Length: 113
Length: 117
Image 1 (cartoon, chains in turn blue, cyan):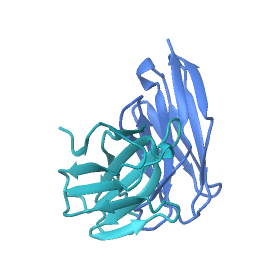
Image 2: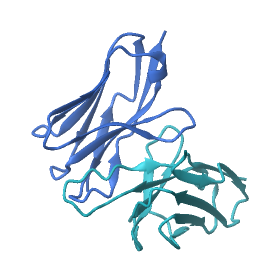
Image 3: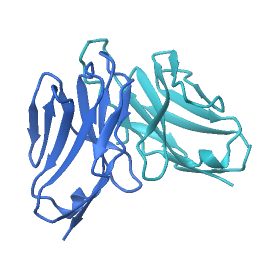
Image 4: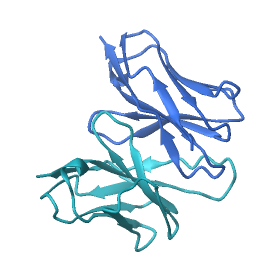
């Protein structure tokens, strides 16, 4: 089955700096890669996603890149703000119909002001 | 307005005493999921319903059961909770139109934090 690895497990950045979180997946059939943000004690919320037919997607300060050949995808946050502090999970679907998400272990992002 | 609602937000039960967690949704999504999330870990899928079809994960203990009486509601039953079952339980929903490559974005509830004494 699919396996998703996520690095780093913790990331501290200064406010205004960029943050990059990387994930690798094992199943070449995976075709959808969402990123979820989970603030302390709250529900995971989708912040950005990308399909396998696209190499990059951007939404304001957040971008995701996908390298299908290398089977890895990354989350990029620019101009970080204290409210970006949270746990970020990457995920991948390993079925064409995409019902099951396989999550990475998560990255704790701390933005220091 | 909350679209995936979980009740209660906090549940305390005794070791071995059955407990039921509930989830309801106003999105009319056909797929509903139950995840277990322990501290500082990723959500772990326990099972999901695709319409009325129940799909259990291979490593989900028999102690965990689920019911989906209708589209809007889904329940998680823990028959004999152990100390190791203390966790946050997340419900999620998605719409699967049966299209290959579709996103099937999952919407999560706020979770129920279960404590086992």
